[in-house]
Length: 346
Image 1 (tube, rainbow, N blue to C red):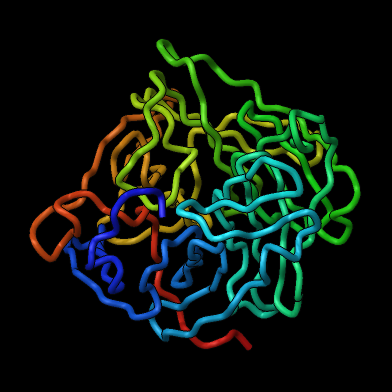
Image 2: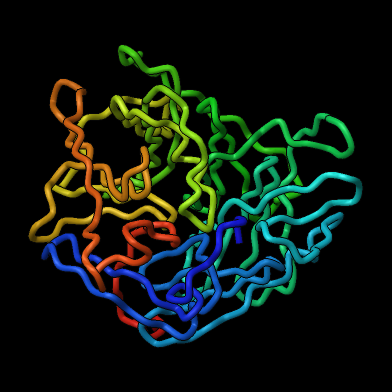
């Protein structure tokens, strides 16, 4: 999909599954994953696509597959078969499909809800029962052959009926999901403390155990080339050396951000291509931020300290035959998988 030859094991639907709480690894085969890179997920559901950007939500346990609307339902978007995950607007340029944020799965009471992010800032959503993608509106600046969005979305999340997005500079915006055609409301920007040596910062959004909005800034330096061993480009993996992390929670009553050093309730936070989640399990360190596919590593662990610092630990998953595919280079993007009850909630 990215110009890299796809080996037979990937085309047949194999992938590595690693239980970090038990320290064990397995080689898994799933027919639904044939030829399809995954571009998002939540719990035991993942979003897969193909070179025509047709997308399905797949349950890895039950095998259930649910198609998402075609991206061509977005006004001005055309699809053409390509080696890359990209769509073509009216004009001469193309925009790359970056990821799908699966905010709700088909197992939720109201069904699935998904956000799609493109590399030029275009942001849209669809939910169960919809036949189209609905485009979020924000101010456009004309660059070159088509309108390019000034807000390049780094991450997005659904929070209390609003879609919150953060750009590459840490600025946050909020849309009422009922009115995607309206301009977003800007939120305050958290005050970041400079980390010595850091020249860049990448951002994630999440929620705390108390349902508070969180912004996570990972600091680092020395921009890295895009990884050629992945089928999907990860815009959160642009820093070669990682220096630290900072967490802020949003104080709704004051409209401000407060820096925090504790996730709460002994939980840890799990970030990556998956929808963020937190929890506490045997074998998992408390008050840590676990980030998949970061700094050229499969997993980075940030152990939060009371003084605001974080101890960083790198993890690369096993390369033994049958435990990890493709001679130690996973063509699939590492992401967190959390088994849940497969039946629809009542």
